[in-house]
Length: 510
Image 1: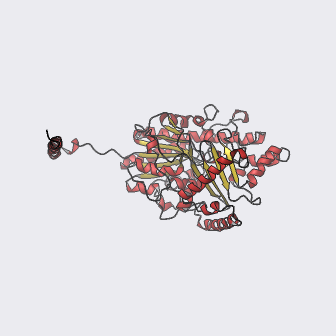
Image 2: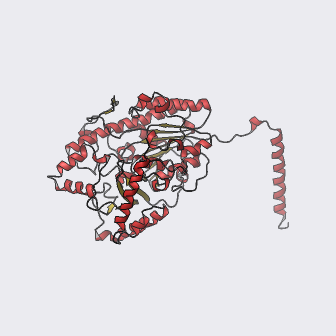
Image 3: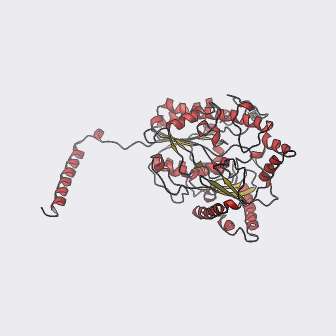
């Protein structure tokens, strides 16, 4: 036998097989063909101001606090190293919907994204998806970039829904059910983002337990001795009281999640639906929301996809972030990634494989709703978290929603007689330029190691990693951080930030 004979024989077999297939194609009826796999439905469910460790499966020790979210985790994959990229509502949510950091989509504050930045609903609309949103509608701007087909406050009982009842389990069930039925009637795959306004303030049991003139439903209340107290807050009676009120909202948030999932099951569309759950950032308390601490950015990410994602699995190794949502959903729908993405698809992880370049999370903070700039940046891995506070000058004081409740007032009052609380109050108000924490032993970021000689080598490693990730994500703060030790550099950067805040205020649309 010559060297070419096996190749010739293989070629002959292939040609016979091809001829047979072509003949079959001409004679088979259309119904005999295997059709393409249907496009998956996409359901994203979000919580507002939910600390990651307030969820049972993520470590909360309050019995039965989040049964619906826990059940979802049992049906899918839980990510123990998931973070958001900025710990404030609108910029963070628009980051999810663009796959880009806020400084790359044009919306660092409560403002519209740039018109030339593609959104997830736009891309899915091109494939024929029906797009819907429940809650947080005004935090996706400009409206024309999101192409919603279903918005309850515009199309369904507007006075009822917009009155704050994006906290009402019955209404979440009703409206999500209507949307699923609409998708069935139109024979379209759907994309729904269902956004619970819980556990955002007002808290159950607080003086302002209503939204405007409309009382909010009370489904469960907790007493101060029933709760799992946050380690980053002082355990004093007034603080414990407000944290107990917060957990009433956490329980109602879980009921909202369960209501949407129940409607999905009742629709008969569950088996072909990719479900993603996460929170936009930590709770509205000092050292969580609108900051860069572990309790600010860590999010309880869960992904369920029947037949695609193995149930009851946990990824505790890879760092994933909010900018990965859009690339992941697009790949699930068969779309290629877009130029300009900062994130990358989680699909390899969902399939149980590894993925490179996931040893660190990078987070940024820009400004509060009142257009005051507090620029911060963070790099974190499994061992340490490094934060750089550009705004910290000993004069500017931190403010915002996290310091508007009982807790902050109680901390300020207690600081008058308690030196440890006084130290925490001072740190929150003015911060320091560099913070460095061992998150293995100090997840609540209580002991700043930035000036500890024993950690000098690790600190320098994170300073270099900060520069690397700033370059990777085209961060406009890169040069200021690189040259931070030169006189006047940070002051000039902060002056630019104040000018940017003025422009942000002009762009806000509601």
